[in-house]
Structures are given as structure tokens and as C-alpha cells.
Amino acid sequence: MAMSSSAGSAEHFGIALHCRADGIEVTLRARTMVLDLTGGCRLERGPNTLRLTGLKLVAELPDAGGEQDGGTVALEQVSDVNARPQGGGRLAYDLSVPLSATVTQPDGVIRLQASAPARWRVTTAAFPPQGEFELAGDTIDFVLPESPESATLVVRGLTLRMSEG
Image: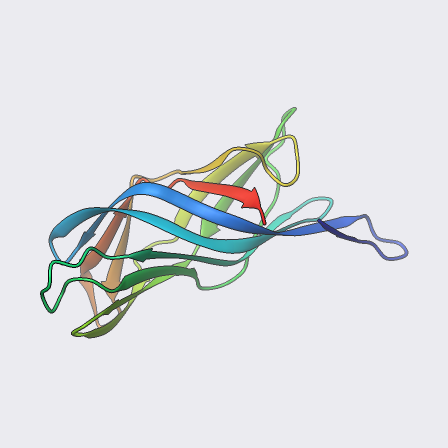
């Protein structure tokens, strides 16, 4: 774990973490599958904020031999997120994370954006946070920027598990 402080400022902690999301239900172009996503991120904590940067999760897609089979899906944080604690004996942080998705398959690459940010609540008394980041909403819809009325990729129940790496 990295620590830094400067004269006149409170301590600041940062750590690179491995991230996992196992058994996540995903629908890509009307085909539903269960995927295990892995990747990483960085969490930083100042005296009154939690900052999430660089979240990226990748999964292999099942391959049945068709043009739209196989390949990978990558979910990636679009911009850094800062959250303030919500108070209480244990600290609770609400994170609203803008995401993009890249689907790479034999027939090409599709770049998608989430129709709304993913929302996670982190409740912890420790840093780095112990346990899971539970998705506040049920689904994340990813759409083509030029066609935002219909979802190309839907991710359900994305619970992040983080560990020091």
C-alpha cells in the first residue's frame, strides 16, 4: 500500500487492486450468457474522499464457431470518480461510475457506452475496503452512441470483489 502526505495535508492512501466479478449474467445481441470478468483498478483515500480510477474488467466470450461467437468483452471506466463518505460508524461511499464496453469478435469491434453510470455502494471501516462492491441497480445497459434507444449489451448484477495485488 502506498502512503503519501505533505506538509499541511492529511495522509493520503492509494492501492492497486485486482478486481473480479464472477458468474455475471450478460446479454449480447439477444444471446444471454454467464461470464467471469477479471481486471484491476486503483483506489485512493484522502481524509474526506474515496477515488476510483482505471477500472477495467475483461471476459472471454463463449465460442460456438459463428461470426458473432468468441472474442472478448471489456468494461472500462470512462473517467475518474470521487465519492464523499455518507457517515455513520462505518464509512459508506456511493460511487457513480461512467463505463464503456468494447466487444471484440471475429466479425469486428463494437464500442458501446453505458446509458447511465453504474452505481456501487461501498460500506467499510477499513482501507482498502473489505468485502464486495454491490451494484445499486439491477442492470447496466450499453448502447451504440449513434443508436441509444436499444441496448446491444446488458450486464446484470455486477458485484465487484477486490483484493490487493
